[in-house]
Length: 370
Ligand code: F0G
Image (cartoon, rainbow, N blue to C red; front, side, top):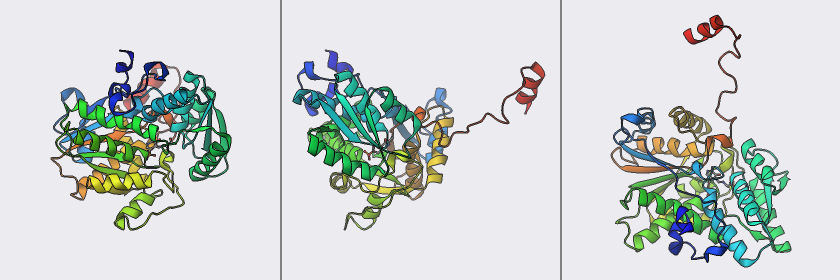
């Protein structure tokens, strides 16, 4: 069946049993789970072992959601959200975004023949993401404010104009993102890992993967719930601040981080994500921009590569292992949420060595001898 080729619709009984004729799929999912731990990466992965050594883990996997059709995990939720919009007969779909949700919405809306509308902060959106929204033909509104302003405005506009809202407030987006959890469990032959670690901004993904694990556990597909560690940038850390007080109260901050995907001060899925962390005995950690960049370099140099926000995963794992919260021999899966090409500026050298070289064999020999 056509839908079985999608890493989301393969699990449709647990996501949305939509009639096939309505389904808007690229298809998505089927992303790699790279063994990168000191013990579990084979000799053909000697370069990947540097990641395991950096994390301090024997059995460590990275699931690369940047391998989805538009280069981020957002496609998993968007295929379901846009399918629902299609079933409801919507004419237009909209979202606020730090760049990846908008790229994904623009692509799926174009495929379905719907008008896509995206609200982005006027600054701090990575070039590759903005290019995608424009290329796929979404009406792109650049707000002179941050993501939290864009989120407030898109909600208001959708209510006023009857446009179908596709932020992770939309429950069908979250249903689709659960497939990250199902797929990684299937890749591990339904042997649940000890930990699942991911970057956290608006908290939709923490909510979704937590829900997937809970469902898999309730269905006896797995024998225990993995513990989830949500990693925030230190400059955009409302969930971390709240966790540190035992979730006594919800926090919001004026967000700033070079990991622009998670530059969010007031996450909309706070309540759902809080419940997930409490239920699975999870943790919330924060990492500095310097730690994110250092981890990104390790992932990039291993030949895998990711966008800055995704590297918060490795930075967070390293910190939690060093603190003894994650044990060296525990099995850990980290999520890389976005593709290297999304942001080709942050943390990547913009010139080659000392610049270009004369087109002579002597000049080339001199460079290679250095
Ligand atoms: N990593 C990347 C690459 C993201 O784009 C996002 C969120 C996250 C992590 C955090 O996931 O919000 O579910 O906690 N990006 C949203 C966007 C906000 O608009 O693209 P979350």
